[in-house]
Image 1: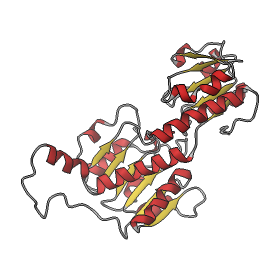
Image 2: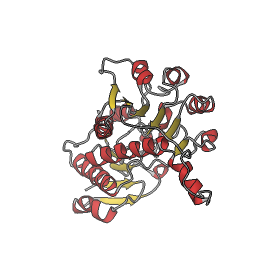
Image 3: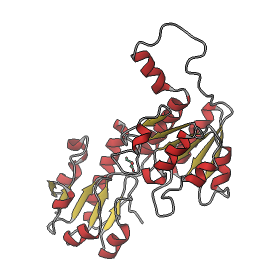
Image 4: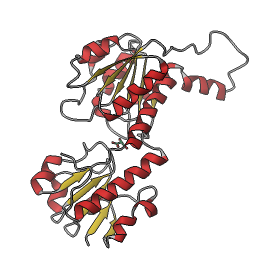
Length: 301
Ligand code: DGY
């Protein structure tokens, strides 16, 4: 039996937390700053910064379950040095919901849905006109997937239905980033945030893109340089930008908020019932297994 610190009561908590209580663990809710040396387990969110300071304070901590697939909020190396095991929540439910959301952004930008919906809402529509809100086509176009892991592959699979051509870039794909960017009409980002991928999309890589291409980011905000994206949009070079994540969450680069060919959403790509439930179940499972000294199913290495 251990003391477990939980930084937020998660959706479906009554259901998903059962194994913690069945295991006799004591659960305390609070903000990560309140974590002290009486806790062996931590269930945290991607908004909790787990760094050396926190680890120095939480001297009894043995197990961290991050309620997210991405774990760039955690200093994993510092955890390893302190003997703290870390897990995340990769699962098909999250992969599917994020892949669907990337498509939602691509479709909405390509068919100008926000502008058209605003137009109808403002009662500006006075009858059918052949030239209003002409958008782009998907069939025969090329989709560039940057980061061909679990989520990227699901986005690619869904492109078959649209009869699109898919090109993928990853460290092992054999293709250069510029090659993929240069041929893609749509570019979808699916890399984790690391020192290598920070500002992967910058002035240079944006310059390698096709004029008029649409870029979507459901990965992590700092993978793009938002100021450079805004510049490429302002110049009329980039056709559209859809982002569910921002460089400095919760605040997007201000100019992006004013642009019609930009869709910004509040980090909700995995916000479906199935994904949120499974993320909670996995976080709890990893905690319980880790606290029992067993292998954590989603140990981050
Ligand atoms: C993740 O899992 O990393 C998403 O950003 C939130 O679900």
